[in-house]
Structures are given as structure tokens and as C-alpha cells.
Amino acid sequence: MKMISSMETSFYPKGAEKMYHSFTKGKINKLRKRSEVLRGKRILILSMGILLTIAFVPIRVSSALVGDFNNDGKVDYDDFLIFKAAYGATTDKSNWNPACDIAEPKGKIDFEDYMIFLINYEKKCPETPEEVLQRVAVNYGLVNDMKADMITSSTFEGKPFGDTHYSRYYFKKPNKVKMELFSSPHWTTKIGIIIIDGPNMYLVDPSTGQYQELNLLEQTGLNSSQFTQMDACFNLDEFLVNHNITMTGVTENIGTIEATPKIANNLYSKLEMQVDCEKGLIVRSMIYRGGKLIETIETKESRWVNELAWIPVKMVKVPLLEAGEFRTMMIYENMAINTGISDSEFSP
Image 1: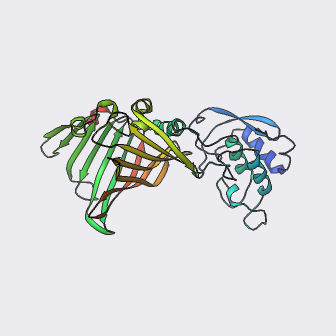
Image 2 (image 1 turned 45 degrees about the horizontal axis):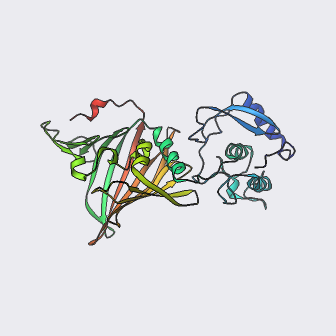
């Protein structure tokens, strides 16, 4: 891998040196980019022939492999030459290249774009399924707990179907979920509570406090080590032990993983997951049973919550039905993470 020499960085204007001095004074709040490995650490950045040590703070950028301007799956010297040709350009210039405009604010390729490029220099797309899933585990591992308002609506054959449902959603890793169901968007009258705590599900009547308990392992025919595909997010070692995994390819930084359980179960025969390798986010899951696709879950929108982790905020679930297309949309609002939700929240 060819390094960027001090001579090759000499094309940058005097404004770059001024920006450098602002870095040395700790004024780096504008330079923000999420990194699943380097967040919170100090890194070395090569700039103008010297090594600068700066505090690493995230920058919001697109989901593609940032800096891979020629789309060959890595950020290298060839990409540097492309960036060099576009440096200093604005949208009205002949050398404008929108792919190189990777930092906010948009409209000019300047030193902030250069710093992001350097942070990503020598990065490459993951080459194995384990590497792809590791990025997922790192992203989701940043979330200890979460709560949000969830709005669920459905359509059948493109037309509204049934009522819109309102619930307050709680999660605590690795496997605790609670949903408080409300009768209206006013969030005043609670009509039901569903709690999942590991393999146990509780259906609670909020008016009486009485509940029904179900064992999900018995319902699904799984053993405890196979229980959920969310192990890929929160218990990766266990997931890898209990599944055969392959990667069918990486396209535009989306890696496709196939996972088949080593021991047959009643829930699924294969999982296919499409992963945004930069965000570490599962953007699409396809669930198969008996060789037949039975359900697709797709992330339509995601958000970088607390500038820490990428989390879906709009998802669409599509079970495959012979009667027609049935789609359920789940929207998460007022999301908060890592607020210290107590285990008692998940007791019936």
C-alpha cells in the first residue's frame, strides 16, 4: 500500500495549515465520523508530512465505504489521486466530483473532506462473513438499552388494513423486550403489555395485573443456544457456534450473509442478512423455512443515535402470503439509548 508523501500533500492551500493549528488547540468538533473500532481513542493522522495526534470524534457521513471513489472495495492511493484532482472544487468548477464531497457542510471539497479521507485511508470492505458480522456486533454492542415510541400500521395489497397501533418499546441487551400497548396516539390508556425476558414471554393485563406466561423455546422448537437471530447482534460467538455461515458477496458496501442452523428447528431453516458494512447495520433480513422464503424485514431509515450507534427507525416487515401482499411498517420515535433501564422493568 503506497503512503501519501509530504510532497504529494503540498497542493493543499494555506488554509489547511490554519486548520491544522485549530486542531492543535483542540477545536475539532466539526470533524465527526463514527468508527466502530477507534471511537473514543486517539489516532494518528498523516497530514502535510507530519503525524498529528488528535482526539477522535465522530463525523456524519454516507453509508458507503468512505473514500473508495473508484469502488474497488478499498481506500488506497488510487482514491487519493482522485481526491487530489477534485480538492478545492465547488459545484460550479470543472473538477467538481460529488463523490469527494464527504463532509458537512456540502458544496465544497476542502480540508474537512481531506481529514475524513485520511481517517479512512487503507480501509477495505470485509472479506469474510465473520468480519461482516463482527461489524454488526460492534455497532449493536454500543447499545445497552433503548426505549422509544413505536407506531405500527399495515397495508394489504397497497391499501390500509386494520388500525394503527401505538406502543412504548423497551429493550435491554441481550434479550429483554417490553411493549406497552396504548389505545391512541395520546399515550394515556394502556390496553396491554407484552414482555419477553430470554425464553419467557408474558402477556399482561394492565387493568388487573394478571398475566399469562409462555415458553418460547417450547413454542419454536429451539434450544437456548439457537433461540434468536439477534444473537448475530448481541451474542455473536454463540451465533457462529450454532450456525454455518457463508458470504455471497459485497456490493456497494452491502455484505450478504447466509446462516443455516446446525440443528434443525421449527422457526427457520436459513437466515439471509444484508449488512451495511460501514454502519454495522442489518438493513434486510430474509427468513426461510423448509427452503421457502416466509418473511422479509427491511430497514427503510436508520439514525445515528447519540452519535454512537446506528439504529433502525423505520422498518417494514413483509410475510409472504398466498392471499396477497401484507406489509407492516414500524416507526420508532423519541428514541433514547443507554439510559440505565432496570431489569425490574421486564418483570410482569
